[in-house]
Image 1 (cartoon, rainbow, N blue to C red):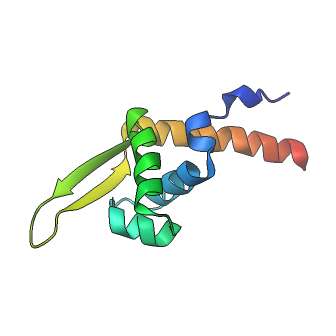
Image 2: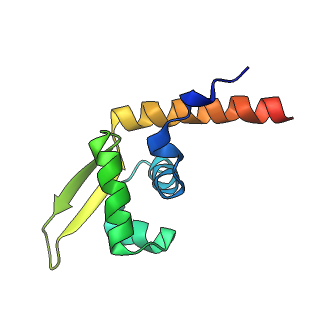
Image 3: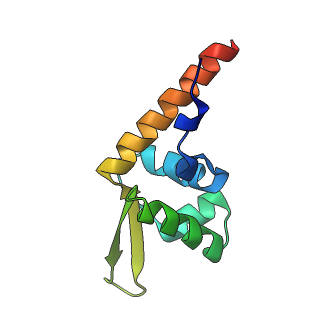
Length: 99
């Protein structure tokens, strides 16, 4: 039987799962504006989810203050990649059980 308590509660929330999925989908970092646009989230909502993921050490951020307006880019940390793989593994077990 599957131990559902293994589902990471930080990742499992819809907004954070969406962010983790996008960050895992490519090697290059995502800018705040690109995440916001892709996920159709408000600034405050996105910041709140990013803060939760950052507090769990699942993401890393880098501020670029080059030309014009400062921009923050986000990517999965090593811990975030591991946590996301474990999360997907539990989901795969759930899917297999349901088939």
